[in-house]
Image (tube, rainbow, N blue to C red; front, top):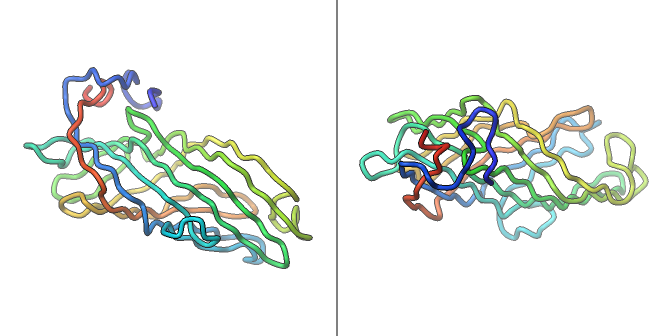
Length: 220
């Protein structure tokens, strides 16, 4: 996590800055992952992050950590960063006797901000500037079993290893409650091609809040 998006500071991420920020971590239960625009709608599906996480029709667990400006001893408006996002994406889709099992881990992490933006004073709305989530990483496996594998947008038969890194552009806005203890985002597209569009909508509840020393790339 010590790298740095092209738009941020020196990227050392070593905590040697001269400021402190509030680090708030959110449980992402309630977030929704949608698959749409599949051929004939055969693979369209929606999955909600929530227990039991190992069910075929759910995803998770998921967590999001953000840094917020310290305003008179409280987390408040000003520069804010997405520091760490993690979501387990284990789910199953099927149609016409064909089953697709996806076993994936998605992350976006950077101690200088995988996405950097601003939380409006009094508006509780965070806007990414630029509108990008950098280095969105997907690692795992997709398995297809059935006669339709390799057809109508379905992956090839058997296992397909996945190791992808992309920048989500455009990303999304995030709305917070006045005390920053809950959040929800606008939907953002994760991937899009001729076989499907996948998108994510975040919903989160605070699980921890700590005042921490910020890296120089945040303070500067």
